[in-house]
Image 1 (cartoon, rainbow, N blue to C red):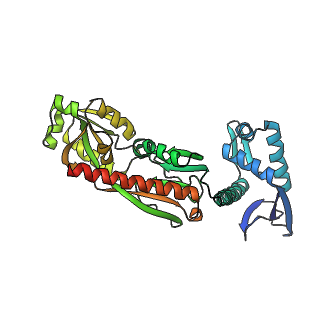
Image 2: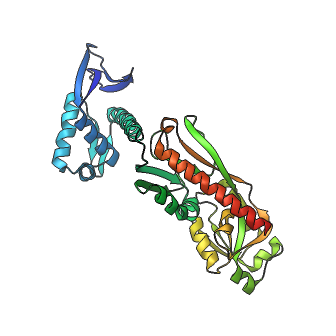
Image 3: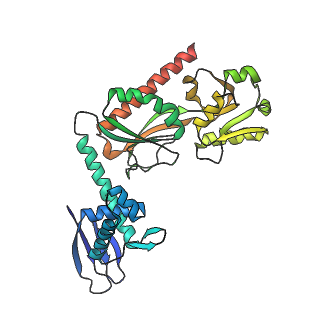
Length: 337
């Protein structure tokens, strides 16, 4: 497979894009040349640029470092330009290399989308689905429910990416996201799933041993377990934690995710700031000071417009919606009992 690239010869060697082509602007004759670049060379260049190292790229591609280096040099010769600055700590893209890297990244994105569409044309749901959400929601709510999804679709491969950083769905860093805020990108399909509220909880054993606080002033006699307000988390949670810390709480345990906070609470270390959906997952949790809570945090499911007809996306979306309905039903039943 080859990829057509149009460019001008240039003493400056400045690549720029126009009408879907890569161009190299020249201050000399200005003649337009056309070069055919082997896709293998572009693929290897992209791997090197992404890894920042010939060795690491070779490991990913199952090629020797010398073979990778030869392909990169051949690509540079075909373009008559330098794509990397070499130094002791690795490789850095030149300005021309950055532009070519942007192009190969866009090409791979389109190939990934085409592959997904081809696979999704089948009746069966199978293949890899990259799901991203926050560490807390992924570990405490989503992961425990995944056995039912696998029971329905045993050939599905879920790559669950748990992090607070918002991955770029249009650039295919993930296929589908569950986030604690509405996505800002316009080219995404989004659906509001539920709302979450951050509240104070303790274990029933802790309350039996240390007593139940009746006012925020009573927190002075207890240990607070929460995320560090400076760590990545939903803004509503950080605001609640900052407010609680104004009450001069002498003993504090901070953890960088809600799973750690939950473990501290379950092991009777103190009173923790946790999302309210956990009360329906752990029967020994007791809400403390019900009037002290964050504002509602919206939970959205989002995926790229180009995956609108993906059967894998539809299967995951329907599964999550069914689980939300079941969760709401249990919540109503517990409230009525």
